[in-house]
Length: 423
Image 1: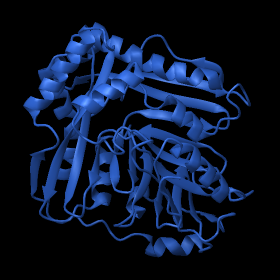
Image 2 (image 1 turned 135 degrees about the vertical axis):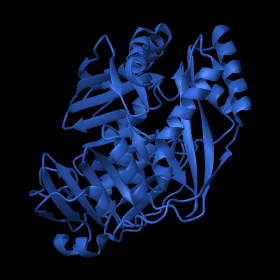
Image 3 (image 1 turned 180 degrees about the vertical axis):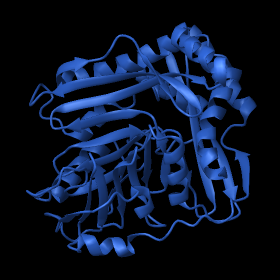
């Protein structure tokens, strides 16, 4: 193991206690000021606070080591009375590096989890505390306060340099080196007051209710892309690739029709779907991916979207795969890296000019049964100390990509988080 830190003294099982909550409190308003953990969509999901165990790991076997660590910790912790909501037993939140072999992936087991599914709200503690009592001290009121004064600065590349990198990538695609590469850029922000992650998460959830509002170890955002969900043997994913800005009135409808009819965007989308399907096929007895994408409409952009579903083999040539095995098999997809994967990763390292860290990596949660959900850490920012943040946005570059249009797409994606900062 390259790096690890486990803070729990009980490695066999957590002393799980669970209680149902009356009413329907806003999960995000239960979060503490520090150490917020979140995976929420349309008011359902789970949030966590505190910490009973933690793992930080990197290296070529990072996900396998994390899976073994979690299996050992979670053994016997699901409990026979675990309720019908995520977080009914032991839960770990995870933020996985874009390149787990190089970057640091973080796994956090919270002291307390509040969860909701199908209208059922529960609180689970993993240190033996009374679930009903801990909520009294779990969160402070989210202050409204004055809006922060913000200063923005270029990240690794200024806009002109980034456009030059896009043009270089298009040239390599035209030369036949690869079919697609995803190039990202970062934007730095400094605030005159400390940034409150709870306030940011509430703004993101309000503006993007169809996205998964996530937070793990200072990385937070609202992702529209579900990398992989597992419930028993049932698998599902939502693939997004191909993007268009929003407009107003009839212009908005024209933009939507143009996206659906765009040969460039449909080709980019097909590459992303194909890469996911190829990665999952060895693990599945059945796998379905519709032939035609649909439109996913968000507040600031539209995407071409395809929902993929499958049934996992009980055992197969690759053995009985756990959720982290599957995540490792499908990541990185063409939606965040490119095609072919190895060559696209090389081009990213050469042209992008920055360390992605956990941006565009898997983010989500997993329970003691091995069920869970992982999205891709997109439309996000990494908080850097109390007063700063690093925003990320990327674009799929294919034949015919125009650097200026791709720059505009990143600016539209930055706007998702900027709106949370500025309102």
